[in-house]
Length: 508
Image 1: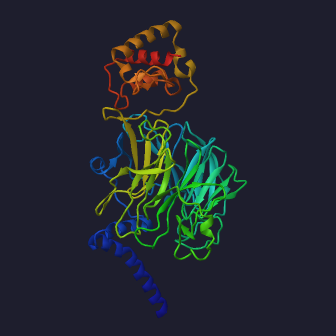
Image 2: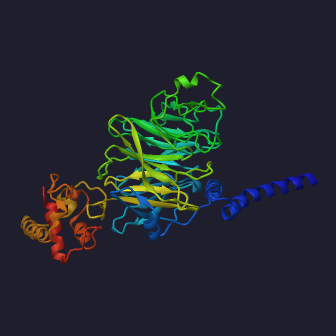
């Protein structure tokens, strides 16, 4: 009995030390150790911080020229991976609560989501997610499931069904990331069970591939210690993946990696780090170095690159061939590093230049956040998740005058007079209202910011096309009462707003 009591006491004492020691270091430890202790507590116990205030965001966070940053949503818990739907809603995963949630698109133009809903619950540590061909795919820690998804309504339909099961989720890197490709395949990454070892499970430390029903499952690439982020370069459809290098070799080695993923490719781990044999496992398979595919780009050691997103809709010059990567930040360095989002720019010679995109999360011993994933909406709006403060940030382009510009994303319609409400007017009423609306358009100098077709009156003019697929007459007239900034509120009465809506929607 005494032995059992001593064992219980020892376990409780060690548990207490694990919890208390980092807290003690945060308050009284050497410079640099406080941030590391906060990160360790964040990883193990979910320790974090409150979302920064609007003034802190303005003062502390720095975003690349041509962009503006704001806090989009807070108090979200351990928010991880993101997906913007076709209708403009934002999906996100919350592994620790076993949920997939939806933030309703910002229809009222206040820069915040209009609501929050749980789409799926009771899952096993869901992490990666994607939407394709009317299905929402979710990568749980031990398998993959799917459920029918109505993007226009933001609802799931029917039952959730597992299409891949029996994936290992023991050990260090249990998260799985899933992405749907244009080639009809689903790609799934799984990290290693350890810092460095020879895996007994051939599916770990790999990227896998299978069909939307789970068939034709295969290992696509291997030797990838922890490839959390996947995306395809839009100019040549090459698949790229981030990869977290091993720990406990010092502050500056090995680098974390960006790899161009090839079918059947081997990327070194655990025998090779980047292009250098591992000090512990390099001699186990001396021939591994000859088969190793070197990284396309190296990040600083222990920066922990997670989500990657190639920009496809940016209107900012210099981001035509660029991707954003979330650096979650180090825990295995004497001086903390990372904790930001960087942009990677592909040059004409194939080289890649790395620049800071969103920084300022780390300032001395003050830690505001740890970026996780990036998503881009069809209007160019960028969303960035932070699992340290439970927040999502919103990045928008700036116009020449410095104001943030972001199109309002509305649910898609089939269009036509019936759907838009134009059919309720007689031809004569429509012509009369269109004439009045044309006068309102001209008298309020709408053409200084907007063009009536894709040709545009100037390089900065936003074309007013496809409105009938987004608005009815009533919805567009209502929009004019409180338009999305930076569009001003014009002194239009109800009749003027109706006429302007008819004029814009009745054009061919």
